[in-house]
Length: 281
Ligand SMILES: [Zn+2]
Image (tube, rainbow, N blue to C red):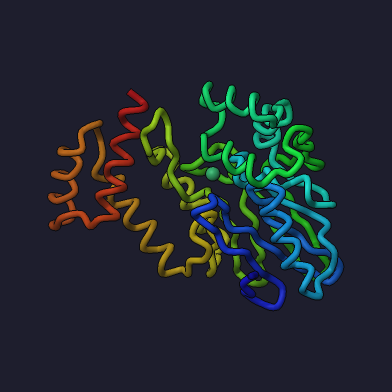
């Protein structure tokens, strides 16, 4: 079921057990815009069925927040203009060359091009799997794009991110709502979960400049300003204590700088920044 955020903004909450991210819907007087296309045609279909129950203008645009499979594999289901930034477009080209039959999928899993979970979802939720081909996006933008859905402006912008280099956000200024995709998360490299330390402050600045009051995250649904401020504060405090690939040193430094033990979140972030040093080394 869709959650109604305001008269013009809805979202389908993330479903973690199926690796389904949050999907968004913004409605103007003429057209509607969707944020992320779902992790499969089945996910997209369920979203479209929910939208069909509402009296909203037709979906003209689908914005993909980044080129991770769970955010775009449903894109063929939308009879709409797909919008991506230039880097996302480049990353999607690999997926457009993929075949989706079992044998090909197993080859990609073996080569670690896709995850076993991704293969499982494709096999379960793409009905015509053997002939499936991912379509190409329609609009490729650089930096920023503004769309008017009819008395409803959407700002679409590529921002700096600790998750991927191709992160796009969608901001609806008159509602102070921002769809972040996975931008605010960390990333996994060679099996190590890490936050890219050099991008943390630039990313926070990029996100805070919009003055949003409600934040939709790819795998968390919704956060308010207080929750995001706590999240940023814990990340920043953890980051400041990490200057080497040693977790012990980082914890020691954290205690000296803050006069207390790190909480569970901060400990998790300390490890993630330490992992960033390990990956960079
Ligand atoms: Zn992602």
